[in-house]
Length: 252
Image (cartoon, rainbow, N blue to C red; front, side):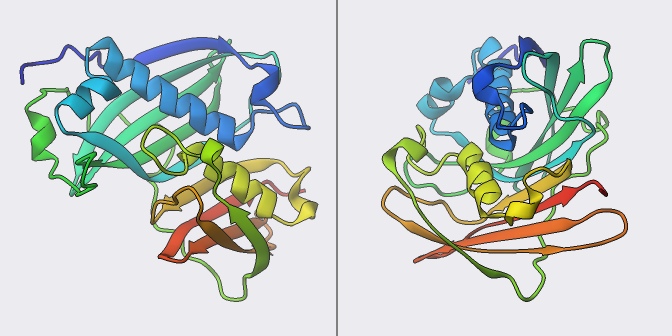
């Protein structure tokens, strides 16, 4: 495996479309995660190291956690710029940063996602040293304004929030529930009172993949605070805990 000329970063200029937004005409969290997934793929693809090339070499990246700081959610028809870069590795995890800007260069969203490298056939986690042979430049000192994602600490007393069947259309080329769909499941599980609230950030921990035909049992709750409210959603299936998430809201 030789060196792949992956650029230090990748910038994507775009306009927020009608299918990216919800009833409030603002970018849905699931759409944000879809854009992040695509822009990361585009960066590696530009250096010849896209998904198919990784799989050809017996490798695949799987997201484990994501965290976002939201200054302003982009709105329908707004022109934005999204920049991403492969930052660094720590333990078995790789970190990727994302920065959403408006056309004046003001930050809209700052995000960091953590990934592990796995064998696409066995799903066994691989050591980061396996990836070093591709000579992709790391930039450990290039940070944005978002903290690295950490494990969600769930409060006691979460209430049942229903069930969600995993359908064929929910799955992606890895064969499991796509990471962006989790955001829709989370938002659907939140109390109705939060629907018109301004979101200032969210964290998702992807704990155990969900497969077509599995049923996710949901629990949710909200806590009020002077600096804003926080809501939690947790999902479990027959094989254990599937995900934990926290959504933070700006004060009303």
